[in-house]
Amino acid sequence: MSDALDETLRERGLANTALSCFLPSSTSVASFQGSTFYFTITTKVAAQSEQVELSTSPVQLASKRALIVDDNFTNRQILRLQAESWKMETYTAKSGKEALAELAKGTQFDIGILDMQMPEMDGITLARQIRKQSGCQNLPLVILTSLGRVETFSDFHDVQFAASLSKPIKQSQLYDVITRILGNQPIQASISHSPLVDQHLAHRLPLRILLAEDTVVNQKVALLMLQKMGYGADVVTNGLEVLKALQKQSYDLVLMDVHMPEMDGLEATRRICQEWEVGFRPHIIAITANAMRGDREVCLAAGMDDYLSKPIQLQELAEALSKCRSQRSSEFTSIGTQGKVMSLELQPSPNVLQEGQNQTLKIAKIDAKILQSLRNIVRGDHVAFVELIECYLTETPRLVQDISTSITTQDTKTIWKTAHKLKSSSASVGAMDLAQLCKVLEVQGRSSNLENSRELLSQLYQEYEQVKTALQKELAKEVP
Image 1 (tube, rainbow, N blue to C red):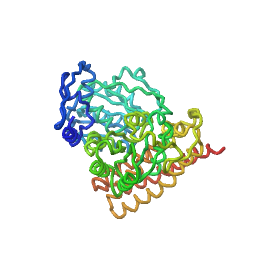
Image 2 (spheres, one colour; image 1 turned 30 degrees about the vertical axis):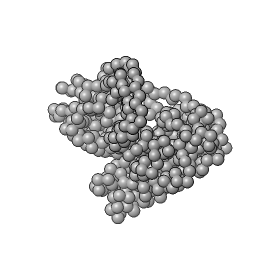
Image 3 (spheres, rainbow, N blue to C red; image 1 turned 90 degrees about the horizontal axis):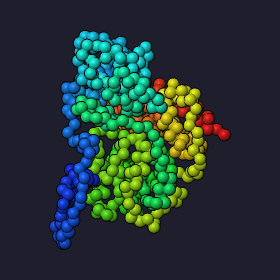
Protein backbone atom coordinates (compact mmCIF):
# COMPACT_ATOMS: atom_id res chain seq x y z
CA MET A 1 0.00 0.00 0.00
CA SER A 2 1.20 3.51 -0.59
CA ASP A 3 2.83 5.64 2.07
CA ALA A 4 0.23 8.28 1.24
CA LEU A 5 -2.62 5.96 2.23
CA ASP A 6 -0.80 4.99 5.41
CA GLU A 7 -0.33 8.65 6.31
CA THR A 8 -4.00 9.41 5.58
CA LEU A 9 -5.17 6.56 7.77
CA ARG A 10 -2.78 7.59 10.55
CA GLU A 11 -4.05 11.16 10.46
CA ARG A 12 -7.57 9.82 10.97
CA GLY A 13 -6.53 7.46 13.76
CA LEU A 14 -7.05 4.43 11.52
CA ALA A 15 -3.49 3.33 10.91
CA ASN A 16 -4.04 -0.06 12.53
CA THR A 17 -7.55 -0.66 11.23
CA ALA A 18 -7.87 -4.01 9.49
CA LEU A 19 -7.64 -3.74 5.71
CA SER A 20 -10.62 -6.05 5.46
CA CYS A 21 -12.77 -3.07 6.50
CA PHE A 22 -11.86 -1.35 3.22
CA LEU A 23 -10.99 -4.04 0.67
CA PRO A 24 -13.39 -6.29 -1.29
CA SER A 25 -12.59 -9.97 -1.78
CA SER A 26 -10.80 -9.42 -5.09
CA THR A 27 -8.23 -6.65 -4.92
CA SER A 28 -5.36 -5.09 -6.79
CA VAL A 29 -2.84 -3.00 -4.91
CA ALA A 30 -0.45 -0.61 -6.61
CA SER A 31 2.27 1.70 -5.36
CA PHE A 32 2.28 5.17 -6.86
CA GLN A 33 5.80 4.53 -8.12
CA GLY A 34 7.26 1.26 -9.33
CA SER A 35 5.64 -2.13 -9.94
CA THR A 36 1.98 -3.14 -9.72
CA PHE A 37 0.96 -6.36 -7.96
CA TYR A 38 -2.36 -8.22 -8.06
CA PHE A 39 -3.76 -10.76 -5.67
CA THR A 40 -7.10 -12.33 -4.82
CA ILE A 41 -8.29 -13.19 -1.33
CA THR A 42 -11.32 -15.19 -0.28
CA THR A 43 -13.19 -14.00 2.77
CA LYS A 44 -16.20 -15.13 4.76
CA VAL A 45 -19.01 -12.91 5.91
CA ALA A 46 -18.60 -12.17 9.61
CA ALA A 47 -21.14 -13.51 12.04
CA GLN A 48 -23.79 -11.07 13.24
CA SER A 49 -22.29 -10.94 16.75
CA GLU A 50 -18.99 -9.72 15.32
CA GLN A 51 -20.79 -7.07 13.29
CA VAL A 52 -22.40 -5.79 16.45
CA GLU A 53 -18.99 -5.68 18.13
CA LEU A 54 -17.68 -3.43 15.34
CA SER A 55 -20.60 -1.04 15.51
CA THR A 56 -19.41 2.54 15.15
CA SER A 57 -22.78 4.22 15.73
CA PRO A 58 -23.35 4.20 19.49
CA VAL A 59 -26.68 5.38 20.86
CA GLN A 60 -26.75 9.03 21.85
CA LEU A 61 -26.76 9.40 25.63
CA ALA A 62 -27.65 13.10 25.74
CA SER A 63 -30.77 13.72 27.85
CA LYS A 64 -31.03 10.07 28.90
CA ARG A 65 -31.95 9.84 32.59
CA ALA A 66 -29.88 7.70 34.95
CA LEU A 67 -30.73 6.67 38.52
CA ILE A 68 -27.52 6.15 40.52
CA VAL A 69 -27.75 4.44 43.92
CA ASP A 70 -24.66 4.01 46.10
CA ASP A 71 -24.15 4.63 49.82
CA ASN A 72 -20.57 5.80 49.20
CA PHE A 73 -20.48 9.55 48.49
CA THR A 74 -17.31 9.40 46.42
CA ASN A 75 -18.61 6.58 44.24
CA ARG A 76 -21.85 8.49 43.64
CA GLN A 77 -19.87 11.57 42.64
CA ILE A 78 -17.71 9.61 40.22
CA LEU A 79 -20.68 7.92 38.55
CA ARG A 80 -22.57 11.21 38.37
CA LEU A 81 -19.64 13.07 36.82
CA GLN A 82 -19.08 10.30 34.30
CA ALA A 83 -22.73 10.21 33.25
CA GLU A 84 -23.00 13.99 33.05
CA SER A 85 -19.85 14.14 30.92
CA TRP A 86 -21.90 12.15 28.37
CA LYS A 87 -24.69 14.77 28.68
CA MET A 88 -26.94 12.42 30.64
CA GLU A 89 -29.33 13.67 33.33
CA THR A 90 -28.76 12.05 36.71
CA TYR A 91 -30.44 11.55 40.05
CA THR A 92 -28.27 10.18 42.85
CA ALA A 93 -29.53 8.42 45.95
CA LYS A 94 -27.50 7.29 48.97
CA SER A 95 -29.88 4.47 49.88
CA GLY A 96 -32.50 2.17 48.46
CA LYS A 97 -35.19 3.94 50.48
CA GLU A 98 -34.27 7.28 48.92
CA ALA A 99 -34.30 5.81 45.41
CA LEU A 100 -37.71 4.18 45.90
CA ALA A 101 -39.13 7.45 47.22
CA GLU A 102 -38.06 9.20 44.01
CA LEU A 103 -39.57 6.46 41.85
CA ALA A 104 -42.80 6.66 43.87
CA LYS A 105 -43.14 10.29 42.72
CA GLY A 106 -43.44 8.98 39.18
CA THR A 107 -39.97 10.10 38.06
CA GLN A 108 -39.02 8.25 34.88
CA PHE A 109 -35.51 6.89 34.21
CA ASP A 110 -33.89 5.24 31.20
CA ILE A 111 -31.43 3.17 33.27
CA GLY A 112 -30.62 2.38 36.89
CA ILE A 113 -27.10 1.82 38.28
CA LEU A 114 -27.15 0.09 41.68
CA ASP A 115 -24.36 -0.76 44.08
CA MET A 116 -24.54 -4.32 45.38
CA GLN A 117 -23.33 -3.76 48.93
CA MET A 118 -25.32 -1.12 50.80
CA PRO A 119 -26.53 -1.04 54.41
CA GLU A 120 -30.21 -1.62 55.26
CA MET A 121 -31.12 -2.53 51.68
CA ASP A 122 -28.61 -4.11 49.30
CA GLY A 123 -28.66 -3.78 45.53
CA ILE A 124 -30.53 -7.02 44.87
CA THR A 125 -33.28 -6.22 47.36
CA LEU A 126 -33.57 -2.72 45.91
CA ALA A 127 -33.82 -4.12 42.39
CA ARG A 128 -36.66 -6.42 43.45
CA GLN A 129 -38.49 -3.45 44.98
CA ILE A 130 -37.93 -1.37 41.83
CA ARG A 131 -39.52 -4.12 39.75
CA LYS A 132 -42.69 -3.71 41.85
CA GLN A 133 -42.93 0.00 41.05
CA SER A 134 -45.35 1.12 38.38
CA GLY A 135 -43.66 1.40 34.98
CA CYS A 136 -40.35 -0.06 36.22
CA GLN A 137 -40.83 -3.69 35.25
CA ASN A 138 -38.61 -3.23 32.17
CA LEU A 139 -36.26 -0.54 33.48
CA PRO A 140 -32.68 -1.65 32.59
CA LEU A 141 -30.69 -2.16 35.78
CA VAL A 142 -26.90 -2.46 36.12
CA ILE A 143 -25.52 -3.96 39.34
CA LEU A 144 -22.03 -3.01 40.59
CA THR A 145 -20.18 -5.68 42.56
CA SER A 146 -16.82 -5.82 44.30
CA LEU A 147 -13.88 -7.79 42.90
CA GLY A 148 -13.54 -11.18 44.48
CA ARG A 149 -17.28 -11.62 45.10
CA VAL A 150 -18.81 -14.83 43.80
CA GLU A 151 -22.30 -13.64 42.85
CA THR A 152 -23.61 -15.08 39.62
CA PHE A 153 -26.72 -14.25 37.66
CA SER A 154 -28.32 -17.37 39.16
CA ASP A 155 -28.22 -15.61 42.54
CA PHE A 156 -30.67 -12.97 41.32
CA HIS A 157 -32.21 -14.43 38.16
CA ASP A 158 -35.64 -13.16 39.17
CA VAL A 159 -34.49 -9.52 38.93
CA GLN A 160 -33.22 -9.68 35.32
CA PHE A 161 -30.28 -7.30 35.48
CA ALA A 162 -29.16 -5.88 32.15
CA ALA A 163 -25.51 -6.16 33.20
CA SER A 164 -23.22 -6.84 36.16
CA LEU A 165 -19.92 -4.94 36.47
CA SER A 166 -17.05 -5.59 38.89
CA LYS A 167 -15.29 -2.69 40.61
CA PRO A 168 -13.05 -0.89 39.89
CA ILE A 169 -15.04 0.12 36.81
CA LYS A 170 -13.30 1.81 33.92
CA GLN A 171 -15.09 4.75 32.34
CA SER A 172 -14.94 3.22 28.88
CA GLN A 173 -16.37 -0.03 30.23
CA LEU A 174 -19.35 1.75 31.80
CA TYR A 175 -19.89 3.81 28.66
CA ASP A 176 -19.92 0.72 26.46
CA VAL A 177 -22.40 -1.07 28.72
CA ILE A 178 -24.81 1.89 28.89
CA THR A 179 -24.71 2.49 25.13
CA ARG A 180 -25.29 -1.19 24.41
CA ILE A 181 -28.18 -1.41 26.85
CA LEU A 182 -29.91 1.73 25.61
CA GLY A 183 -29.16 0.74 22.01
CA ASN A 184 -30.67 -2.73 22.57
CA GLN A 185 -27.37 -4.39 21.69
CA PRO A 186 -26.28 -7.66 23.33
CA ILE A 187 -23.72 -7.48 26.14
CA GLN A 188 -21.09 -10.19 26.17
CA ALA A 189 -20.80 -12.00 29.47
CA SER A 190 -17.63 -11.19 31.36
CA ILE A 191 -15.71 -14.37 32.15
CA SER A 192 -13.36 -14.10 35.08
CA HIS A 193 -10.26 -16.18 34.63
CA SER A 194 -6.51 -15.84 34.87
CA PRO A 195 -4.91 -17.11 31.66
CA LEU A 196 -1.33 -18.24 31.87
CA VAL A 197 1.28 -15.80 30.63
CA ASP A 198 4.27 -17.06 28.68
CA GLN A 199 7.17 -16.63 31.10
CA HIS A 200 9.61 -17.22 28.24
CA LEU A 201 8.12 -14.70 25.83
CA ALA A 202 11.37 -12.70 25.88
CA HIS A 203 13.27 -15.71 24.53
CA ARG A 204 10.80 -16.24 21.70
CA LEU A 205 10.39 -12.54 21.00
CA PRO A 206 13.45 -10.57 22.20
CA LEU A 207 12.73 -6.86 22.51
CA ARG A 208 14.73 -3.85 23.65
CA ILE A 209 12.18 -1.89 25.70
CA LEU A 210 12.01 1.73 26.89
CA LEU A 211 9.50 2.49 29.64
CA ALA A 212 8.31 6.11 29.87
CA GLU A 213 6.45 6.63 33.17
CA ASP A 214 6.81 9.44 35.72
CA THR A 215 5.21 7.68 38.71
CA VAL A 216 7.74 5.54 40.60
CA VAL A 217 5.17 3.00 41.81
CA ASN A 218 3.87 2.46 38.29
CA GLN A 219 7.44 2.13 37.03
CA LYS A 220 8.07 -0.69 39.46
CA VAL A 221 4.79 -2.46 38.67
CA ALA A 222 5.47 -2.29 34.93
CA LEU A 223 9.04 -3.56 35.39
CA LEU A 224 7.78 -6.47 37.49
CA MET A 225 5.23 -7.39 34.85
CA LEU A 226 7.88 -7.26 32.15
CA GLN A 227 10.21 -9.35 34.23
CA LYS A 228 7.57 -12.02 34.64
CA MET A 229 7.82 -12.51 30.86
CA GLY A 230 11.62 -12.39 30.90
CA TYR A 231 12.05 -8.76 29.84
CA GLY A 232 14.01 -5.83 31.24
CA ALA A 233 13.57 -2.15 30.36
CA ASP A 234 15.28 1.21 30.48
CA VAL A 235 13.23 3.82 32.36
CA VAL A 236 12.66 7.51 31.63
CA THR A 237 10.19 9.92 33.23
CA ASN A 238 9.02 12.27 30.47
CA GLY A 239 8.80 12.76 26.72
CA LEU A 240 12.01 14.76 26.44
CA GLU A 241 13.95 11.91 28.03
CA VAL A 242 12.31 9.51 25.56
CA LEU A 243 13.69 11.49 22.63
CA LYS A 244 17.16 11.68 24.21
CA ALA A 245 17.16 7.91 24.86
CA LEU A 246 16.18 7.15 21.25
CA GLN A 247 18.97 9.38 19.97
CA LYS A 248 21.51 7.37 21.98
CA GLN A 249 20.34 3.89 20.96
CA SER A 250 17.58 2.01 19.18
CA TYR A 251 14.58 0.39 20.86
CA ASP A 252 12.05 -2.08 19.54
CA LEU A 253 9.30 -0.87 21.87
CA VAL A 254 8.35 2.19 23.92
CA LEU A 255 5.74 1.81 26.66
CA MET A 256 4.57 5.44 26.68
CA ASP A 257 2.57 6.97 29.50
CA VAL A 258 0.30 9.61 27.99
CA HIS A 259 0.39 12.08 30.91
CA MET A 260 3.95 13.08 31.85
CA PRO A 261 5.56 16.40 32.89
CA GLU A 262 7.62 18.63 30.55
CA MET A 263 6.51 16.70 27.45
CA ASP A 264 3.59 14.28 27.41
CA GLY A 265 3.44 10.98 25.56
CA LEU A 266 1.36 12.30 22.67
CA GLU A 267 3.80 15.08 21.80
CA ALA A 268 6.77 12.74 22.23
CA THR A 269 5.17 10.29 19.81
CA ARG A 270 4.54 13.01 17.24
CA ARG A 271 8.22 14.02 17.46
CA ILE A 272 9.30 10.40 17.02
CA CYS A 273 7.14 10.05 13.91
CA GLN A 274 8.67 13.24 12.50
CA GLU A 275 12.30 12.27 13.19
CA TRP A 276 12.26 8.52 12.49
CA GLU A 277 10.83 6.88 9.38
CA VAL A 278 8.53 3.89 9.46
CA GLY A 279 10.64 0.78 9.90
CA PHE A 280 13.29 2.67 11.86
CA ARG A 281 11.20 3.90 14.77
CA PRO A 282 10.05 1.81 17.72
CA HIS A 283 6.65 0.26 18.23
CA ILE A 284 4.82 2.60 20.66
CA ILE A 285 2.18 1.41 23.12
CA ALA A 286 0.16 4.12 24.87
CA ILE A 287 -0.53 3.75 28.59
CA THR A 288 -3.20 5.97 30.11
CA ALA A 289 -5.33 6.11 33.24
CA ASN A 290 -8.29 7.80 31.51
CA ALA A 291 -9.70 4.87 29.50
CA MET A 292 -12.39 6.98 27.86
CA ARG A 293 -14.00 6.35 24.49
CA GLY A 294 -11.99 8.35 21.96
CA ASP A 295 -8.72 8.12 23.89
CA ARG A 296 -7.54 5.22 21.76
CA GLU A 297 -8.24 7.15 18.56
CA VAL A 298 -6.33 10.17 19.88
CA CYS A 299 -3.33 7.98 20.67
CA LEU A 300 -3.39 6.28 17.28
CA ALA A 301 -3.75 9.63 15.53
CA ALA A 302 -0.61 10.82 17.32
CA GLY A 303 1.26 7.86 15.81
CA MET A 304 1.05 5.26 18.57
CA ASP A 305 0.62 1.65 17.54
CA ASP A 306 -1.40 0.25 20.45
CA TYR A 307 -3.18 1.29 23.64
CA LEU A 308 -3.43 -0.02 27.22
CA SER A 309 -5.44 1.49 30.08
CA LYS A 310 -4.40 1.51 33.74
CA PRO A 311 -4.31 -0.44 35.91
CA ILE A 312 -2.51 -2.62 33.38
CA GLN A 313 -3.41 -6.31 33.36
CA LEU A 314 -0.57 -8.76 32.82
CA GLN A 315 -2.40 -10.69 30.09
CA GLU A 316 -3.23 -7.48 28.20
CA LEU A 317 0.42 -6.41 28.34
CA ALA A 318 1.55 -9.82 27.10
CA GLU A 319 -0.86 -9.64 24.16
CA ALA A 320 0.34 -6.14 23.27
CA LEU A 321 4.00 -7.23 23.39
CA SER A 322 3.20 -10.21 21.16
CA LYS A 323 2.21 -7.77 18.40
CA CYS A 324 5.69 -6.21 18.37
CA ARG A 325 8.50 -7.34 16.12
CA SER A 326 12.15 -7.18 17.09
CA GLN A 327 14.39 -5.36 14.64
CA ARG A 328 17.57 -6.18 16.54
CA SER A 329 16.99 -9.62 18.03
CA SER A 330 20.70 -10.39 18.11
CA GLU A 331 21.28 -7.28 20.21
CA PHE A 332 18.62 -8.15 22.80
CA THR A 333 19.73 -7.44 26.34
CA SER A 334 18.21 -9.64 29.01
CA ILE A 335 17.17 -8.84 32.57
CA GLY A 336 20.02 -7.61 34.72
CA THR A 337 22.00 -6.03 31.86
CA GLN A 338 19.53 -3.60 30.36
CA GLY A 339 19.41 -0.08 31.82
CA LYS A 340 17.61 0.77 35.04
CA VAL A 341 15.84 -2.46 35.94
CA MET A 342 14.95 -4.15 39.18
CA SER A 343 17.16 -7.08 40.11
CA LEU A 344 14.76 -9.79 41.26
CA GLU A 345 14.95 -13.56 41.37
CA LEU A 346 11.85 -15.41 40.20
CA GLN A 347 10.48 -17.85 42.73
CA PRO A 348 7.35 -20.04 42.90
CA SER A 349 4.06 -18.16 43.26
CA PRO A 350 2.69 -17.86 46.80
CA ASN A 351 -0.68 -19.18 47.85
CA VAL A 352 -3.70 -16.94 47.51
CA LEU A 353 -4.47 -14.79 50.56
CA GLN A 354 -6.61 -16.46 53.14
CA GLU A 355 -10.23 -15.39 53.43
CA GLY A 356 -9.64 -13.69 56.77
CA GLN A 357 -6.86 -11.58 55.28
CA ASN A 358 -9.11 -10.59 52.39
CA GLN A 359 -11.80 -9.46 54.81
CA THR A 360 -9.28 -7.35 56.75
CA LEU A 361 -8.12 -5.65 53.58
CA LYS A 362 -11.69 -5.05 52.51
CA ILE A 363 -12.46 -3.23 55.75
CA ALA A 364 -9.27 -1.23 55.32
CA LYS A 365 -10.32 -0.20 51.80
CA ILE A 366 -7.56 -2.10 50.03
CA ASP A 367 -8.57 -4.33 47.14
CA ALA A 368 -7.21 -7.72 48.15
CA LYS A 369 -7.33 -9.05 44.60
CA ILE A 370 -5.13 -6.26 43.21
CA LEU A 371 -2.68 -6.60 46.10
CA GLN A 372 -2.54 -10.35 45.54
CA SER A 373 -1.87 -9.79 41.84
CA LEU A 374 1.23 -7.81 42.85
CA ARG A 375 2.37 -10.76 44.98
CA ASN A 376 1.80 -13.07 42.03
CA ILE A 377 3.84 -10.81 39.77
CA VAL A 378 6.88 -10.84 42.06
CA ARG A 379 6.35 -14.60 42.52
CA GLY A 380 7.19 -14.79 46.19
CA ASP A 381 10.05 -12.28 46.22
CA HIS A 382 9.39 -10.58 49.57
CA VAL A 383 12.07 -7.94 49.02
CA ALA A 384 10.50 -6.80 45.75
CA PHE A 385 7.00 -6.65 47.24
CA VAL A 386 8.21 -4.63 50.25
CA GLU A 387 10.15 -2.27 47.99
CA LEU A 388 7.06 -1.63 45.90
CA ILE A 389 4.78 -0.88 48.87
CA GLU A 390 7.40 1.25 50.65
CA CYS A 391 7.87 3.24 47.47
CA TYR A 392 4.14 4.04 47.45
CA LEU A 393 4.16 4.96 51.15
CA THR A 394 7.14 7.26 50.60
CA GLU A 395 5.80 8.98 47.50
CA THR A 396 2.15 9.49 48.53
CA PRO A 397 2.60 11.99 51.43
CA ARG A 398 4.53 14.28 49.12
CA LEU A 399 1.78 14.11 46.48
CA VAL A 400 -0.94 14.74 49.07
CA GLN A 401 1.00 17.76 50.35
CA ASP A 402 1.35 19.07 46.79
CA ILE A 403 -2.42 18.78 46.33
CA SER A 404 -3.01 20.60 49.63
CA THR A 405 -0.67 23.45 48.65
CA SER A 406 -2.26 23.72 45.22
CA ILE A 407 -5.75 23.96 46.70
CA THR A 408 -4.55 26.78 48.95
CA THR A 409 -3.03 28.66 46.01
CA GLN A 410 -5.93 27.75 43.66
CA ASP A 411 -3.42 26.17 41.25
CA THR A 412 -5.92 24.04 39.33
CA LYS A 413 -3.40 22.73 36.80
CA THR A 414 -1.15 21.28 39.50
CA ILE A 415 -4.19 19.88 41.31
CA TRP A 416 -5.39 17.79 38.39
CA LYS A 417 -1.92 16.68 37.34
CA THR A 418 -0.93 15.62 40.87
CA ALA A 419 -4.31 14.02 41.58
CA HIS A 420 -4.01 12.10 38.31
CA LYS A 421 -0.60 10.77 39.34
CA LEU A 422 -1.79 9.76 42.83
CA LYS A 423 -4.92 8.17 41.37
CA SER A 424 -2.81 5.97 39.14
CA SER A 425 -0.33 4.81 41.80
CA SER A 426 -3.10 4.23 44.38
CA ALA A 427 -5.00 1.99 41.97
CA SER A 428 -1.81 0.01 41.38
CA VAL A 429 -1.62 -1.01 45.06
CA GLY A 430 -5.36 -1.60 45.44
CA ALA A 431 -6.29 1.66 47.23
CA MET A 432 -9.38 2.09 45.08
CA ASP A 433 -11.34 4.47 47.35
CA LEU A 434 -8.31 6.74 47.55
CA ALA A 435 -7.99 6.55 43.77
CA GLN A 436 -11.65 7.55 43.42
CA LEU A 437 -11.17 10.59 45.64
CA CYS A 438 -8.22 11.60 43.49
CA LYS A 439 -10.40 11.22 40.43
CA VAL A 440 -12.94 13.70 41.82
CA LEU A 441 -10.13 16.18 42.55
CA GLU A 442 -8.70 15.63 39.07
CA VAL A 443 -12.06 16.41 37.47
CA GLN A 444 -12.46 19.52 39.62
CA GLY A 445 -8.96 20.69 38.73
CA ARG A 446 -9.53 20.18 35.01
CA SER A 447 -12.81 22.12 35.16
CA SER A 448 -11.32 24.83 37.45
CA ASN A 449 -14.17 24.20 39.88
CA LEU A 450 -12.78 23.70 43.38
CA GLU A 451 -16.12 23.49 45.15
CA ASN A 452 -15.84 21.31 48.29
CA SER A 453 -12.13 20.81 47.55
CA ARG A 454 -11.23 21.35 51.22
CA GLU A 455 -13.69 18.65 52.27
CA LEU A 456 -12.27 16.31 49.64
CA LEU A 457 -8.75 17.04 50.87
CA SER A 458 -9.79 16.15 54.42
CA GLN A 459 -11.25 12.87 53.13
CA LEU A 460 -8.04 12.30 51.20
CA TYR A 461 -5.92 12.62 54.36
CA GLN A 462 -8.21 10.28 56.30
CA GLU A 463 -8.32 7.73 53.52
CA TYR A 464 -4.56 7.69 53.12
CA GLU A 465 -4.09 7.09 56.85
CA GLN A 466 -6.32 4.01 56.58
CA VAL A 467 -4.50 2.83 53.48
CA LYS A 468 -1.12 3.37 55.14
CA THR A 469 -2.19 1.34 58.19
CA ALA A 470 -3.43 -1.51 56.01
CA LEU A 471 -0.30 -1.59 53.87
CA GLN A 472 1.97 -1.44 56.89
CA LYS A 473 0.19 -4.54 58.22
CA GLU A 474 0.88 -6.23 54.89
CA LEU A 475 4.55 -5.27 55.15
CA ALA A 476 4.69 -6.81 58.64
CA LYS A 477 3.63 -10.13 57.15
CA GLU A 478 6.64 -10.04 54.84
CA VAL A 479 9.16 -10.02 57.72
CA PRO A 480 10.92 -13.44 57.76
